[in-house]
Amino acid sequence: MASVSHYFLLVLVFLDSHAAQPSCLPGCTCSEESFGRTLQCMSITLGKIPRKLPEEFKQVRIENSPLFELPRGSFINMSTLEYLWLNFNNVTVMHLGALEHLSELKELRLEGNKLRSVPWTAFRATPLLRVLDLKHNRIDALPELALQFLVNLTYLDLSSNRLTVVAKSVFLNWPAYQKHRQPGCEAEILSSMVLALHDNPWLCDCRLRGLVQFVKSISLPVVLVNPYLMCRGPLSKAGQLFHETELSACMKPQISTPSANVSIRVGQNVTLRCLVQASPSPTIAWTYPLSTWREFDVLTSSTAEDAALSELVIPAAHLVDRGSYTCVASNSIGRSTCVISLHVQPAQAPPTLHSLFSTSEGNAYIDLRVVKQTVRGIMLEWFVAPDTPEKWFTLYIGSDEARRKEVVHVGPGISTYLVDDLLPGTKYEVCLSLGRQPPRQGRCVVFVTGRDHSGLEGRERLLHTTVILCAVLLAVPVGAYVWAVQAPCSCREWGLRCCPLRRKAPRCPLAVPEHRDVSYRDHTAVCEDGLGHRDAEGEGYEERDEGRDSGPGGMVCASSP
Image 1 (cartoon, rainbow, N blue to C red):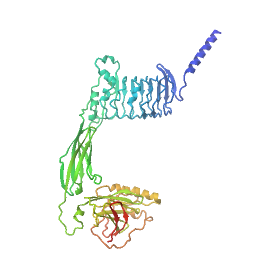
Image 2: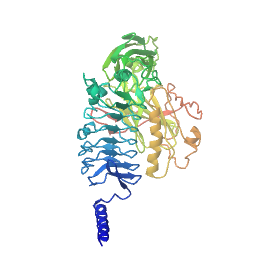
Image 3: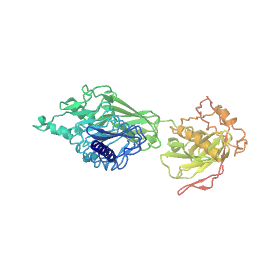
Image 4: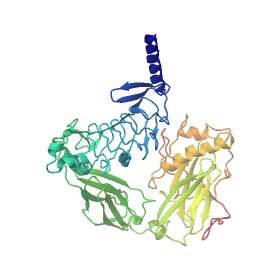
């Protein structure tokens, strides 16, 4: 009887001990290890840290899950947790208070996640942390005081991230390293400080000079997991080991130029140069008064490791190009400028008795371009220099459909004009002149509308896809025209055959022109299928009265011939 009672008592004790054990999370396993109770959740669809986890867990291991975020107070009930492994998840965001209440934590492993940055002040809550594994993330920067709260850290893995430049002071401020450097403390350090920095895209310029010197001088108790750190850039340093490279000190840009005053005549080509010495490599830009309208090519090349040459190329200079051109160089250390004065002298041309243009007309600079498209038209904008506020303008608008060109007179102070009711599949040319002068070569734009489609939506798509293409291509110095067409038929067939059933009648009658101007010629359009010249010598002009008020200070009107 006594043996039966003893056996029954053992069964009750066993059942009572198992009843006291908390249930495990669904899909996870719980086990007893030598250091305490462990929770393992492997390859389950866990989107966030479970709330109210039992406090007695010493290790939590969640891996290969879609875990995205570590919010504030994620482990609020786990004050006894010592090992937290969150490897190979999708952790992208770690909040400042994510590690609150983990005062006993000794290991934090976040390998193989998507962290771009780490809230380093969050480690105030983990004074006992000794292992921090952050390899295979996307971390691209380390603040100077990143390690100041990791007072007991002896293992830091930052390998296989996106670090390019790190200051030497980051590791000089490592409390364990500072403790080692104190006199008489060497004997107290029983373990090494392990550091992993390999497989990062190190940019070996002057900003990395301190870290390179630190790596070269590392000795026990600091140990690099892989001491062969390699430069990824710049090109002159790519592939070099830290131990092989020598880096110079950083330097603010210093700019020089062969000539601060340049004089040329109208029509000549000129190249303005500035030589920049700087470390790290500078960003070089040019500023000048008409940069919005006059866009010039800038060529920048490296002449030495810490030197670059920037060239601003001005083809066929005009009087409007004279002025101050500023070369601006900047890097992380500072910014410098250099001003070059360009003087453009008028060309010495023999006077003509029957010139079609006045002196002011011949010396004027006119830039005409397409700046905007609408559902049924385009917006033109022009710039004229020197500025003549009292001057009127004349627009000549023509197409392949009409033999006569519409003539629109634009009042002073206006610099835009809307051309609407464009026909599909048609080549247009718009020219601008001062006063009532006939159009001159080099002051026109050419563009092509696309094929028509049924409905307003198709019409809008027609203009948006084709006119915009022309506007972009026409943003080049006036006189260089590009006619780009994307269609199954040739350029001429596209305008004449591809949409014959939907073409509207021309607005101007096809009558014999009363006025012929031999000074006006159509211009060559560079076409993908080789369309050549078109002679418009016999074309006339039709003046049009818009009767439209275009804002204060100007008006659009027409006059009788």
